[in-house]
Image (cartoon, rainbow, N blue to C red; front, side, top):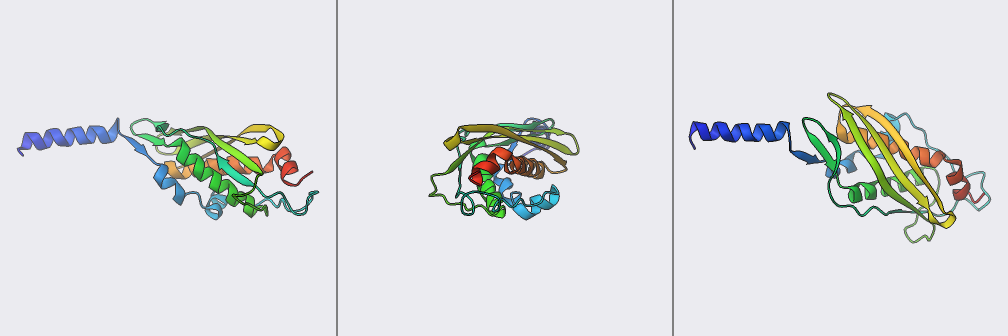
Length: 187
């Protein structure tokens, strides 16, 4: 390949790298969804939901991802674009919600008929050298017809981390919801 060919190829690759190429970060998110790490990074404490209820212990829960979208969803766009796959992200969120329920002393069982449904409403990041991220999760408890959107916002230097931080805060907001606590504790 001659010098002009190498130069043209280099310019095309550099332009793609700096502008229009989208990077799907979904595969990197499982490393971020580690409960103790996220609790520490977002200064959140476990919530004990095992006492104060009317049922023995708590209800046994099953968190189900209901998001079926498989097209890339743009989380951030500037000189580089970052995307996630909503159905894969929401599956991670459902598993993470189950971890947070266990941390709150709530039994979790995939065979349980007591389900919580979760969808990704929005994940949006902004910034230049550091990122701020907003996450909105739609959660439904079909048994009582309760639906609410929970939001989290957090900042940081790495896009995958801020998505995890903001998601953790949205899940904590869910656990602190008095209606959710009343349902889990059979009150």
